[in-house]
Image 1 (cartoon, rainbow, N blue to C red):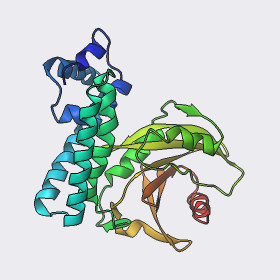
Image 2 (image 1 turned 180 degrees about the horizontal axis):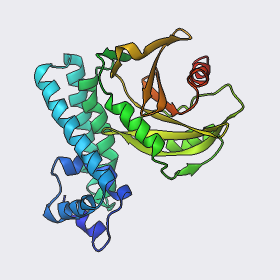
Image 3 (image 1 turned 120 degrees about the vertical axis):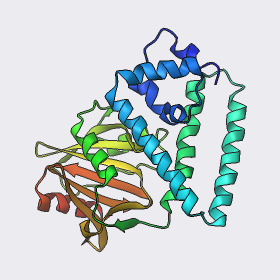
Image 4 (image 1 turned 90 degrees about the vertical axis):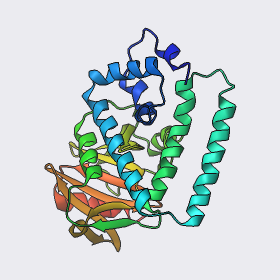
Amino acid sequence: MKNVGQLVQNVALGCEDFEPFIDTYVDEEFDERERADMEAHLAGCERCRGRVNAQVRFKAQLREKLSEERAPQSLRERITSELATLELELDEERTETRPLYVRVGWVAGPLAAMLALVLLMPEMTIAPAASSPTPVVDQTVEWHKGNFPLEITTSNPQEASAWFQDKVDFSVRLPHFDNARVNLLGGRIAHVEDRRAALVLYEVDGARMSVLLFDGEGLKVPRESIRQVEDRDIVWLNQKGYGVAVVQDLGVTYAMTSDLNEDRFLGLVAGTMKR
C-alpha cells in the first residue's frame, strides 16, 4: 500500500474512515506513515480501539480453530478458488485511479466472510453452547443502547432494504411485523465482531426496538436460552436489562433488542416468522 497516506494527508481520520480498514490495520499491511495516521485516530477513539481488540481476538480464535480442525476438502477448494478470484480482481483494480482506501474496502468484506466459513460451519443454524457470556449478544445490546445517528431515515421497508443492498454481503430482508404500532424509523451500518451488519430501528408505542441483521451461521448461544415458538427455534436472552430475541432465516441472523415486556416482545417476534 503506497498511496493511502495521500488520501488522509492533513486530514484527521474519523470513525467512518477507519472502520472499513480495521482488518488491514490488524494485519499490519499499512506502511509506517499510514499506520501512524491510523494510530493517531485510535489514541482518541475508545470505540475503534474496542473494535480493533475484538478483531485481534477473532483472528487469534480463527488461527486456533484452523490449527485444530481442517475444513472439508470441498470447502477448502471453494475458498481457494474465491480467494484467487478476489486477488485477480484486486490486481485489475490497482490499475484504476480510485484511492486505495476505496479499492481495499470492496475486498475486505468478502474475504472476511469466506474466512469465517471455515470457523463457523455453515450447515449449523443455531449451535447450542454451555452457559456462558455471548459476545455477539453483548455487541447487539451496545448497538441498541448507543443511540447512533441513522444513515437513512425512512418508514418504507423496501427503501431501507434497497439502501443496504451494496453495503453488506447478504440480502437484507426486513422482518414483517403484523402490528400497526410497529413503526420503522430508519437504519445504518453496524459491525458485529469483524462483520458488517445492518442495524434497523423501530418505534413501538414509544419504546425503541432495534433489529441487527448479520451473517451469523453457527452462532453459539447458551443451550437453555433456546425456545420453540411457532415451530421455530428462537433464542431469548435478558442482557443488561434488555430483552434480546434471536432468529435465523436463509443464513441471516436477526437479533432484536428492546425493553418491551417479554410476552409482548416474543409475540412480535413470533409474528415475523409466520410469513
